[in-house]
Image (tube, helix red, strand yellow):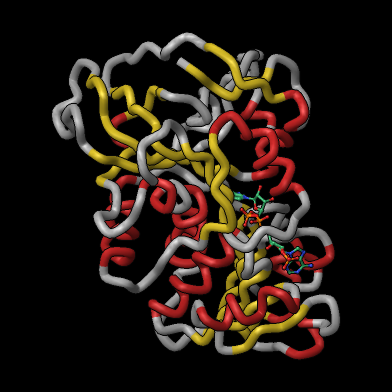
Length: 313
Ligand SMILES: NC(=O)c1ccc[n+]([C@@H]2O[C@H](COP(=O)([O-])OP(=O)(O)OC[C@H]3O[C@@H](n4cnc5c(N)ncnc54)[C@H](OP(=O)(O)O)[C@@H]3O)[C@@H](O)[C@H]2O)c1
Protein backbone atom coordinates (compact mmCIF):
# COMPACT_ATOMS: atom_id res chain seq x y z
CA UNK A 1 0.00 0.00 0.00
CA UNK A 2 0.99 3.67 -0.19
CA UNK A 3 1.63 5.51 3.08
CA UNK A 4 3.17 8.67 4.50
CA UNK A 5 5.95 7.31 6.70
CA UNK A 6 8.80 8.57 8.84
CA UNK A 7 12.06 6.64 9.30
CA UNK A 8 13.68 8.81 11.96
CA UNK A 9 12.30 10.65 14.97
CA UNK A 10 11.83 14.09 13.49
CA UNK A 11 9.27 16.67 12.38
CA UNK A 12 7.04 16.63 9.30
CA UNK A 13 10.00 17.45 7.03
CA UNK A 14 11.02 13.78 7.41
CA UNK A 15 7.70 12.38 6.12
CA UNK A 16 8.02 10.39 2.90
CA UNK A 17 5.24 9.11 0.65
CA UNK A 18 6.20 5.55 -0.23
CA UNK A 19 5.24 1.88 -0.39
CA UNK A 20 4.68 0.16 2.94
CA UNK A 21 3.44 -3.30 3.95
CA UNK A 22 -0.33 -3.63 4.33
CA UNK A 23 -0.92 -4.15 8.07
CA UNK A 24 -1.82 -7.58 9.47
CA UNK A 25 -4.89 -7.79 11.67
CA UNK A 26 -5.23 -9.79 14.86
CA UNK A 27 -8.11 -11.01 16.97
CA UNK A 28 -10.70 -8.30 17.61
CA UNK A 29 -9.30 -6.11 14.83
CA UNK A 30 -10.41 -5.00 11.40
CA UNK A 31 -8.55 -3.78 8.33
CA UNK A 32 -9.95 -0.42 7.25
CA UNK A 33 -9.53 0.93 3.75
CA UNK A 34 -8.77 4.53 4.63
CA UNK A 35 -10.73 7.22 2.81
CA UNK A 36 -9.62 10.10 5.04
CA UNK A 37 -7.35 10.67 8.04
CA UNK A 38 -7.52 13.52 10.54
CA UNK A 39 -4.19 14.92 11.74
CA UNK A 40 -3.02 16.78 14.83
CA UNK A 41 -0.06 18.98 13.91
CA UNK A 42 1.77 18.28 17.20
CA UNK A 43 1.77 14.47 16.76
CA UNK A 44 5.53 14.38 16.19
CA UNK A 45 6.13 15.87 19.64
CA UNK A 46 4.33 12.91 21.29
CA UNK A 47 6.63 10.03 22.30
CA UNK A 48 3.77 7.59 21.62
CA UNK A 49 4.03 8.45 17.91
CA UNK A 50 7.45 6.76 17.81
CA UNK A 51 7.25 3.98 20.40
CA UNK A 52 5.21 1.06 21.59
CA UNK A 53 3.51 1.31 24.99
CA UNK A 54 6.56 -0.34 26.56
CA UNK A 55 8.78 2.36 25.05
CA UNK A 56 10.36 0.32 22.22
CA UNK A 57 11.01 2.16 18.97
CA UNK A 58 8.53 1.30 16.24
CA UNK A 59 10.20 3.20 13.37
CA UNK A 60 9.31 3.52 10.57
CA UNK A 61 5.99 4.97 11.70
CA UNK A 62 2.78 6.09 10.02
CA UNK A 63 1.09 9.11 11.69
CA UNK A 64 -2.53 10.39 11.86
CA UNK A 65 -4.80 8.94 14.53
CA UNK A 66 -8.26 9.66 13.19
CA UNK A 67 -9.74 7.52 10.47
CA UNK A 68 -12.83 7.38 8.28
CA UNK A 69 -13.13 4.58 5.78
CA UNK A 70 -14.65 1.21 4.96
CA UNK A 71 -14.09 -2.11 6.67
CA UNK A 72 -12.22 -4.35 4.22
CA UNK A 73 -11.53 -7.41 6.35
CA UNK A 74 -12.53 -8.55 9.83
CA UNK A 75 -10.28 -10.51 12.18
CA UNK A 76 -11.23 -13.43 14.46
CA UNK A 77 -13.91 -12.69 17.11
CA UNK A 78 -15.19 -9.56 15.35
CA UNK A 79 -18.95 -9.94 15.07
CA UNK A 80 -20.23 -6.37 15.20
CA UNK A 81 -18.62 -5.02 12.02
CA UNK A 82 -18.76 -6.42 8.49
CA UNK A 83 -16.94 -5.90 5.21
CA UNK A 84 -18.09 -2.68 3.54
CA UNK A 85 -19.29 -0.91 6.73
CA UNK A 86 -18.52 2.83 6.67
CA UNK A 87 -16.81 3.60 9.98
CA UNK A 88 -14.88 6.27 11.80
CA UNK A 89 -12.74 6.22 14.92
CA UNK A 90 -9.80 7.24 17.05
CA UNK A 91 -6.77 4.97 16.73
CA UNK A 92 -4.40 3.65 19.37
CA UNK A 93 -1.65 6.29 19.72
CA UNK A 94 1.04 3.59 20.14
CA UNK A 95 0.42 1.94 16.75
CA UNK A 96 0.64 2.95 13.12
CA UNK A 97 -1.90 5.57 12.12
CA UNK A 98 -4.14 6.27 9.17
CA UNK A 99 -1.90 8.27 6.81
CA UNK A 100 -2.00 5.25 4.53
CA UNK A 101 -4.29 3.29 2.25
CA UNK A 102 -5.02 0.75 5.00
CA UNK A 103 -4.90 0.68 8.78
CA UNK A 104 -5.45 -2.09 11.36
CA UNK A 105 -7.86 -0.97 14.08
CA UNK A 106 -9.45 -2.53 17.18
CA UNK A 107 -13.05 -3.06 16.14
CA UNK A 108 -14.23 -1.74 19.52
CA UNK A 109 -12.69 1.66 18.76
CA UNK A 110 -14.79 2.17 15.63
CA UNK A 111 -18.37 3.39 15.20
CA UNK A 112 -20.62 3.87 12.19
CA UNK A 113 -19.65 7.03 10.29
CA UNK A 114 -22.18 9.89 10.61
CA UNK A 115 -24.50 9.37 7.66
CA UNK A 116 -24.75 13.04 6.79
CA UNK A 117 -21.00 13.56 6.42
CA UNK A 118 -18.36 12.90 3.79
CA UNK A 119 -15.39 10.75 4.81
CA UNK A 120 -13.15 13.83 4.95
CA UNK A 121 -15.49 15.56 7.39
CA UNK A 122 -16.05 12.40 9.44
CA UNK A 123 -12.26 12.01 9.84
CA UNK A 124 -12.13 15.45 11.45
CA UNK A 125 -14.22 14.30 14.42
CA UNK A 126 -12.74 11.45 16.48
CA UNK A 127 -9.79 13.01 18.33
CA UNK A 128 -11.20 16.50 18.70
CA UNK A 129 -14.77 15.45 19.31
CA UNK A 130 -13.85 12.80 21.88
CA UNK A 131 -11.37 15.10 23.63
CA UNK A 132 -13.99 17.82 23.94
CA UNK A 133 -16.65 15.31 25.05
CA UNK A 134 -14.48 13.62 27.66
CA UNK A 135 -13.12 16.93 29.00
CA UNK A 136 -16.49 18.63 29.37
CA UNK A 137 -18.77 15.74 30.25
CA UNK A 138 -16.72 12.83 31.65
CA UNK A 139 -14.31 14.94 33.74
CA UNK A 140 -15.81 18.41 34.34
CA UNK A 141 -19.43 17.11 34.43
CA UNK A 142 -20.65 20.23 32.67
CA UNK A 143 -24.35 20.81 33.27
CA UNK A 144 -27.10 22.89 31.75
CA UNK A 145 -26.83 26.46 33.02
CA UNK A 146 -23.12 26.16 33.96
CA UNK A 147 -20.59 28.74 32.81
CA UNK A 148 -17.58 27.44 30.86
CA UNK A 149 -14.46 29.08 29.42
CA UNK A 150 -12.92 27.35 26.40
CA UNK A 151 -9.38 28.34 25.43
CA UNK A 152 -8.19 27.86 21.84
CA UNK A 153 -11.82 27.89 20.74
CA UNK A 154 -10.96 28.23 17.05
CA UNK A 155 -8.83 25.07 16.99
CA UNK A 156 -9.62 21.41 16.40
CA UNK A 157 -10.69 20.62 19.98
CA UNK A 158 -12.02 24.10 20.74
CA UNK A 159 -14.48 24.20 17.86
CA UNK A 160 -16.07 20.96 19.13
CA UNK A 161 -15.98 22.05 22.74
CA UNK A 162 -17.87 25.28 22.01
CA UNK A 163 -20.60 23.39 20.15
CA UNK A 164 -20.92 20.61 22.73
CA UNK A 165 -21.06 23.08 25.62
CA UNK A 166 -23.75 25.07 23.83
CA UNK A 167 -25.69 21.86 23.10
CA UNK A 168 -25.53 20.96 26.80
CA UNK A 169 -27.07 24.34 27.60
CA UNK A 170 -24.03 25.98 29.21
CA UNK A 171 -23.13 29.66 28.94
CA UNK A 172 -19.98 29.66 26.80
CA UNK A 173 -17.00 32.03 27.02
CA UNK A 174 -14.22 31.45 24.50
CA UNK A 175 -10.72 32.73 23.78
CA UNK A 176 -9.28 32.84 20.26
CA UNK A 177 -7.59 35.25 17.87
CA UNK A 178 -9.64 38.11 16.37
CA UNK A 179 -9.65 36.36 12.96
CA UNK A 180 -11.57 33.41 14.43
CA UNK A 181 -14.04 35.39 16.53
CA UNK A 182 -16.81 35.19 13.91
CA UNK A 183 -16.39 31.44 13.50
CA UNK A 184 -16.39 30.82 17.24
CA UNK A 185 -19.45 32.99 17.76
CA UNK A 186 -21.24 31.14 14.95
CA UNK A 187 -20.54 27.84 16.75
CA UNK A 188 -22.39 29.04 19.82
CA UNK A 189 -20.04 31.06 22.06
CA UNK A 190 -21.91 33.70 24.05
CA UNK A 191 -18.80 35.82 24.49
CA UNK A 192 -15.57 35.68 22.50
CA UNK A 193 -12.38 37.13 23.95
CA UNK A 194 -9.51 38.07 21.63
CA UNK A 195 -6.52 36.82 23.59
CA UNK A 196 -4.12 39.22 21.89
CA UNK A 197 -5.87 42.32 23.26
CA UNK A 198 -7.82 41.23 26.35
CA UNK A 199 -6.66 39.42 29.51
CA UNK A 200 -9.42 36.90 30.19
CA UNK A 201 -8.41 36.65 33.85
CA UNK A 202 -9.28 40.33 34.30
CA UNK A 203 -12.71 39.88 32.70
CA UNK A 204 -14.05 36.60 34.06
CA UNK A 205 -14.62 35.08 37.49
CA UNK A 206 -16.70 32.47 39.33
CA UNK A 207 -16.87 30.10 36.36
CA UNK A 208 -17.94 26.49 36.77
CA UNK A 209 -15.55 24.99 34.20
CA UNK A 210 -12.42 25.90 32.21
CA UNK A 211 -11.16 23.79 29.30
CA UNK A 212 -7.56 24.60 28.40
CA UNK A 213 -6.24 23.53 24.98
CA UNK A 214 -3.33 26.01 24.94
CA UNK A 215 -1.25 25.53 28.10
CA UNK A 216 1.56 27.70 29.50
CA UNK A 217 0.45 31.06 30.85
CA UNK A 218 -3.09 30.45 29.64
CA UNK A 219 -3.30 27.45 31.95
CA UNK A 220 -1.53 29.24 34.81
CA UNK A 221 -3.97 32.17 34.62
CA UNK A 222 -7.06 29.96 34.42
CA UNK A 223 -7.26 28.70 38.00
CA UNK A 224 -8.29 32.07 39.41
CA UNK A 225 -11.34 32.47 37.15
CA UNK A 226 -13.09 29.41 38.64
CA UNK A 227 -15.57 29.41 41.49
CA UNK A 228 -14.69 27.26 44.51
CA UNK A 229 -15.62 23.68 43.61
CA UNK A 230 -15.29 24.41 39.87
CA UNK A 231 -13.30 22.24 37.46
CA UNK A 232 -10.30 22.91 35.27
CA UNK A 233 -9.47 20.41 32.53
CA UNK A 234 -6.24 20.79 30.59
CA UNK A 235 -5.30 18.67 27.57
CA UNK A 236 -1.83 20.15 27.22
CA UNK A 237 -0.34 20.65 30.67
CA UNK A 238 -0.29 19.55 34.27
CA UNK A 239 -3.02 20.19 36.78
CA UNK A 240 -1.16 19.66 40.08
CA UNK A 241 -3.24 18.66 43.11
CA UNK A 242 -1.55 21.40 45.19
CA UNK A 243 -2.61 24.10 42.74
CA UNK A 244 -6.16 22.76 42.58
CA UNK A 245 -6.29 22.64 46.38
CA UNK A 246 -4.95 26.20 46.68
CA UNK A 247 -7.86 27.48 44.58
CA UNK A 248 -10.41 25.06 46.04
CA UNK A 249 -11.18 23.54 42.63
CA UNK A 250 -10.82 20.20 40.85
CA UNK A 251 -7.99 19.90 38.30
CA UNK A 252 -7.71 17.29 35.55
CA UNK A 253 -4.89 16.70 33.06
CA UNK A 254 -6.31 14.26 30.57
CA UNK A 255 -5.39 12.06 27.62
CA UNK A 256 -8.28 11.27 25.31
CA UNK A 257 -9.25 7.62 24.89
CA UNK A 258 -11.07 5.80 22.10
CA UNK A 259 -14.73 5.31 22.99
CA UNK A 260 -17.29 3.77 20.65
CA UNK A 261 -20.36 4.84 22.64
CA UNK A 262 -19.25 8.46 22.63
CA UNK A 263 -18.54 8.31 18.88
CA UNK A 264 -22.06 6.97 18.36
CA UNK A 265 -23.44 9.88 20.38
CA UNK A 266 -21.29 12.39 18.45
CA UNK A 267 -22.52 10.93 15.15
CA UNK A 268 -26.11 11.25 16.36
CA UNK A 269 -25.55 14.93 17.22
CA UNK A 270 -23.88 15.54 13.86
CA UNK A 271 -26.71 13.88 11.93
CA UNK A 272 -29.23 15.90 13.97
CA UNK A 273 -27.44 19.12 12.98
CA UNK A 274 -26.43 19.93 16.58
CA UNK A 275 -22.67 19.90 15.98
CA UNK A 276 -20.45 19.91 12.92
CA UNK A 277 -16.76 19.35 12.32
CA UNK A 278 -14.88 22.44 11.23
CA UNK A 279 -12.40 21.51 8.51
CA UNK A 280 -9.67 24.01 7.73
CA UNK A 281 -8.17 22.20 4.72
CA UNK A 282 -8.03 18.83 2.99
CA UNK A 283 -4.71 17.62 1.56
CA UNK A 284 -4.19 14.54 -0.64
CA UNK A 285 -2.14 11.85 1.13
CA UNK A 286 1.04 12.44 -0.94
CA UNK A 287 1.06 16.00 0.48
CA UNK A 288 0.91 14.87 4.13
CA UNK A 289 4.09 16.73 4.96
CA UNK A 290 2.56 19.99 3.79
CA UNK A 291 -0.56 19.32 5.87
CA UNK A 292 1.45 18.93 9.09
CA UNK A 293 3.64 21.93 8.29
CA UNK A 294 0.60 24.07 7.65
CA UNK A 295 -0.86 22.94 10.98
CA UNK A 296 2.30 23.83 12.85
CA UNK A 297 1.83 27.45 11.85
CA UNK A 298 -0.61 27.22 14.81
CA UNK A 299 -3.47 29.14 13.27
CA UNK A 300 -5.68 26.49 11.69
CA UNK A 301 -9.43 27.09 11.75
CA UNK A 302 -10.52 23.67 12.92
CA UNK A 303 -9.06 20.46 11.55
CA UNK A 304 -6.64 19.42 8.83
CA UNK A 305 -7.51 16.23 6.98
CA UNK A 306 -5.70 13.93 4.56
CA UNK A 307 -7.76 12.51 1.71
CA UNK A 308 -6.71 9.01 0.70
CA UNK A 309 -7.40 7.66 -2.79
CA UNK A 310 -9.19 9.13 -5.76
CA UNK A 311 -12.82 8.47 -4.87
CA UNK A 312 -15.05 11.38 -3.87
CA UNK A 313 -14.80 12.93 -0.42
N1 LIG B 1 -4.54 15.44 25.93
C1 LIG B 1 -5.26 15.06 24.90
O1 LIG B 1 -5.97 14.05 24.96
C2 LIG B 1 -5.24 15.87 23.65
C3 LIG B 1 -6.20 15.61 22.64
C4 LIG B 1 -6.21 16.42 21.49
C5 LIG B 1 -5.26 17.44 21.37
N2 LIG B 1 -4.33 17.64 22.34
C6 LIG B 1 -3.39 18.75 22.25
O2 LIG B 1 -4.15 19.93 22.45
C7 LIG B 1 -3.60 21.01 21.73
C8 LIG B 1 -4.71 21.64 20.89
O3 LIG B 1 -5.14 20.71 19.93
P1 LIG B 1 -5.98 21.21 18.68
O4 LIG B 1 -6.12 20.04 17.77
O5 LIG B 1 -7.19 21.91 19.14
O6 LIG B 1 -4.93 22.25 18.05
P2 LIG B 1 -5.16 23.43 17.00
O7 LIG B 1 -6.22 23.05 16.02
O8 LIG B 1 -3.82 23.86 16.51
O9 LIG B 1 -5.80 24.59 17.90
C9 LIG B 1 -5.12 25.33 18.86
C10 LIG B 1 -5.77 26.71 18.86
O10 LIG B 1 -5.27 27.51 19.93
C11 LIG B 1 -5.30 28.87 19.47
N3 LIG B 1 -4.42 29.65 20.35
C12 LIG B 1 -3.07 29.78 20.29
N4 LIG B 1 -2.65 30.56 21.30
C13 LIG B 1 -3.74 30.90 22.03
C14 LIG B 1 -3.96 31.68 23.21
N5 LIG B 1 -2.96 32.28 23.85
N6 LIG B 1 -5.23 31.79 23.68
C15 LIG B 1 -6.26 31.20 23.05
N7 LIG B 1 -6.12 30.46 21.91
C16 LIG B 1 -4.88 30.31 21.42
C17 LIG B 1 -4.90 28.77 18.01
O11 LIG B 1 -5.44 29.67 17.10
P3 LIG B 1 -5.41 31.23 17.03
O12 LIG B 1 -4.18 31.66 17.75
O13 LIG B 1 -5.34 31.58 15.57
O14 LIG B 1 -6.72 31.62 17.66
C18 LIG B 1 -5.55 27.46 17.58
O15 LIG B 1 -6.83 27.67 17.00
C19 LIG B 1 -2.44 20.43 20.91
O16 LIG B 1 -1.25 20.70 21.61
C20 LIG B 1 -2.72 18.92 20.90
O17 LIG B 1 -1.53 18.17 20.80
C21 LIG B 1 -4.32 16.89 23.47
